[in-house]
Every structure is written in structure tokens, then in C-alpha cells.
Image (tube, rainbow, N blue to C red; front, side):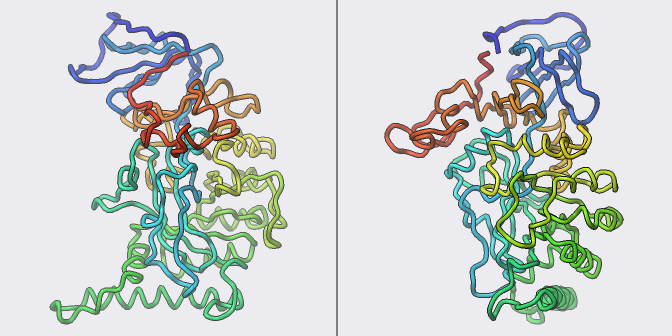
Length: 443
């Protein structure tokens, strides 16, 4: 970006501006709005953490007193990336004491000072679903994070309408949760244990509803409460599943108990794409060029992306970080297109589709007036191997800047990449490293 220009534009009418409003206009980039056609030589106006205006330069009226950031030729602005499945933050869930533990919360284990948060920002990720592992049938509650500045977990959480931290429930089938007792030894027993847990949750809810006094209510049960939130539709199930038969088992469980669900990984989705689409179940894919690690992922193929699209299924991408590195999320969409997915669907899969799967699509996922000012400034087309993430903005605050030597070190790696000179962790807004909050562009 060129040097900042503070300019006043008197042409045309603009919306009222309050004296305290912080308004910036980013001009000259191609805007990938996701909500509509791409806009060459566009203008994105943000105000107090929200998107105010999106459009072509010859149409948009920039408000008086706005800080105008002229971007380099070839620059692209796209919505902040939404990662629907990650393990950043050294997160944990249930332990090895039982195969079903919906009461465990990722919220209570996540380290917001972890290097994973910084790496995610370096990859253009602004919202993320942080998940427990898949070693249990139900390993606990996930947590939806907005990667805004903050030094404690409650600064970063999305919230349900009732104010509680928002997240889903992690479930898994296939080989991961199978083991020695008390774990199931077969796929059939796995499904049976899950059914038993949900039946107990239904009975628990019925007892609560039928209680005529406090004395009649059953003892509080955190596991049953969590499953009750799933059954009521408040909490989404994020289901780890690979093999084609396991995918259909997950769909049968959803149909039996009526919960909302996203299928994750889905290595063999290409084999049952029509059934997935017919069931109306969205899919969160991981695109990797060297699959392996477990037998049930042997048939993981990139063609799942175009086959699911053609079948009419909703598709998003995820990192499963560290399985793939958050810094290279853009490769997911490029690999999807290389396999035959449309450009439009691949861009949606990085943004709006993932946001919808986390129930945050009304706030993020596209560049639209009124949505959060979460966006990424790229050096070029997002599907090009040569493109770099230049800046990542969250709610109108710059959280990553490739021109900052410390940020570049995180993006590219090297000695001391995640520590400062005194050995303190390098996380924006924490410890001795300065925050980018409130800074405009510098190129």
C-alpha cells in the first residue's frame, strides 16, 4: 500500500458520520465480496468495526474525513477466512475415562497465547471453530472464536443469544474412538453407545419438563444438559467421519434424533455425495496433497469437492491444524478448483459456507454493509500459489501485517519465530509485542 492519505471527499451524499466514528476506506483493490460479483478497482469503507460501504470506486461516495488507504495494483480484498475445524490453542476435551463426555468444554482448556492463534492470523483466518480431538465418540464442546485482540479466552468467544460462549459438540466414529473397554470395540457398538446417550438426554429433558417443583427435578447433569442443547438445536454437532459407511451412519443418527450436523473430513464423500446432498447435511472438507496416517483415509480424494458441489451439497474447508498449517489455508480452495470445483464455490467454501456452519453467517463470511469488518488484503488472486496474505483485519483492527518484521517471521518461519528477544511469546496485543490495533495500512 502507498503512504496513508487523509482526504476529504465532498462529492455526493454520504451517510451521517458521528464525531467519534473511526472510518477508513480501502481503495484500488479487486473486491471479492462472495455475496456478489467481484469488483475491480473497488472501495471498502469500514466504520467502528463494521463494514459501511462496498462498491466500485466510481460509485462509492467516501465519507468526509475518512482515512483513505490506496492499495497497490493487483491487490485483492476478500472476507476473513473461516476455519470450521482447528485444534489451535493447545486445546483438549474429554479424557480416557469414558467414550462419551459431552460435558467437557474446549473453552476450559484453550490457551489464547498459543502460537497457533498468530499462525492462523498469518493465514488470513479471522474466525475459527476450535475442536477437541476425535478419540472419543463424544469428546466435548467446541468453541467458536473471533481472533480479535484479547488476553483471555472470554475476549475471543462468539456468544449464543443468551450470552453464553458459542460452540458445537464434537462427535466421531470410525476407528478413532474404538479401543479396549470402556471404549467400543466395533462400529456397531459405537453407534449403540451414542444412541443410548441421546435416549438418556431425552429422558432427562422430559423429567425436567415434567417436574412440578424443585424437589421433583433430577440432579443436575452437565452431560445431559450439553446433549439437550444439541437436541434443542442450539448447539451444532461437528461429526468427524471418514469412510462412506461411517458417513451414512452419522446421517442415520442425525435423522433418528433430529440434531443439526456438519460432517467433517469425509474422506470418501465422493462415494456417497448424492446421499449427503439429499440429506441436506453440510460438509467441511480438508484438502491435502499427501493423505495418509490411517487406513480409513486411504481413499481421501480431492474430487470430493467438485462431486459434492455438483450433487448440491454445501461445502466448506478446514485446516484441522496441525494436520495442515493455518498459514496455508488458501491452498484448500486452489486444490478444490484444480480438482474441478468452481471458483465461486471454492471462495464460498473458505468464507460464507463455513460461517453458516458455525451459525455466524449473519456477522461474517462476506463483504456486505452491516457485517463485521473482518477481511484479508492479499497481494494477488487468492487461488494463485504466488499470492501472499499482506494484512488480516478483525472488526476493523489490523491483526497481522506482513511488513512488520515480527509478523513476517511468523508467516515465513525461522529462528525465534514465535518469541520476542526476551523469550516472551509473540502474540498480538499480549506481552511486550505491540498491537496493531487502530493502525491503517502502510503500503
